[in-house]
Each structure stands twice: as C-alpha cells, then as structure tokens.
Image 1 (cartoon, rainbow, N blue to C red):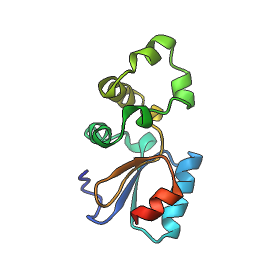
Image 2 (cartoon, helix red, strand yellow):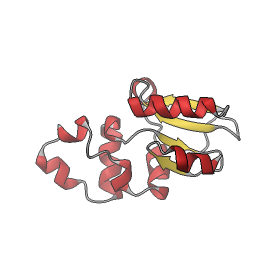
Image 3 (cartoon, rainbow, N blue to C red):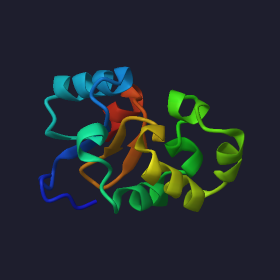
Length: 124
C-alpha cells in the first residue's frame, strides 16, 4: 500500500491508540527498533483504498471483529448481511471501529490483523 507519509522500509500500523492490543503491538514494535508509521482510525479515518487492499490479503472474517462492541451493537439484520468481502468492506467503510486491530502493513506489503509476537518476530 503506498502511503506518501511512509518510507519504503517502514511498517504501517492502523488502529485506535487507546486499544489495548494496539498499545501492546506498538510497544513491541518500538522495542524492536522498527520504523513504524501509526495511522489513527479515530482522527484520520481509514484511507479509501486501504480496505480493498487489506481484503485482497486477509479474509473478511478475520478483518471484521465480530467479538467487539461495535459488532455486538449491530442489529441482527446488519450482522446477517455481512457475508463476504464486499459486504464486509461496506460495513468497515461505514464503521471503521468494526475492524479488528491493529492492521499492519509490513514493509514488504504483507498485511496482518491483530497482534501475534511470534508471527511478527518471523517477519522482521
């Protein structure tokens, strides 16, 4: 994903700064001494081209946080309507807080969702 603010070798972390998992992820990345660009969903929104790029690499059922508060607050009809990447993209565009965090775009372009120190250690 090309972000003009990011350098070619940087890692982009997308999320909400007060999310516990995002805090853990950012702390872990900082401890590794990595160049990280943080994108705050709350302040900056989600870049319009981001969600389709993420969904090209990550299944919609992983990207959509179906355990979170935002999902639980949806009515049953809205939940039932999310059945594929297209409907997941529409929901995530409308309600970015339904996206599982953090979404990380690694320097090589790979996308991961959530924090997994063991997996991340293999990526750096």
